[in-house]
Length: 196
Image (cartoon, rainbow, N blue to C red; front, side, top):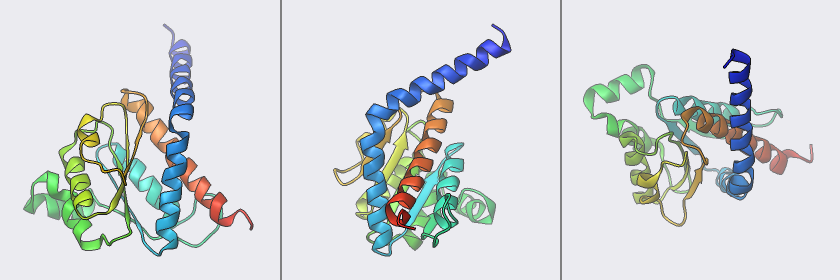
């Protein structure tokens, strides 16, 4: 197989995943957007986290909400639970890794906030711990995973939302999560600022 053939195969795999996701996930993406809009309009905030390469997607969501997506508009209150810098390092040195997000979450989470979690594998102990913690505090959770997510499904309540990309390949899941982030941010702008 040539490099060009491999690239074409990657494009096809990506497109097929997106096409399958369109019919499966569009209602859930719209619902997630509405949950976020409702929370932001109440004056609450979005708290985001991810582990490994999913951390980048969590950063992207917060950057789009805090700064802007495409339209110039007011900033939306959004917080990234930190894995890096002195914050993450301090928590890891004093606690187990699975509680890394829990302390940060306790300090900032309030009733009406929404936790958005990105989990590639769906079995990361740190991620499972923060979801359980949020559910126990009655904070709504939106979780984005791939199709390996049995651990997470058992934690969520009927008030929470699970968006499961129909793939087990990490690269396709990451790409789809980024598309979902961009779609949500564009829908928020459309819903709140389409008159401008």
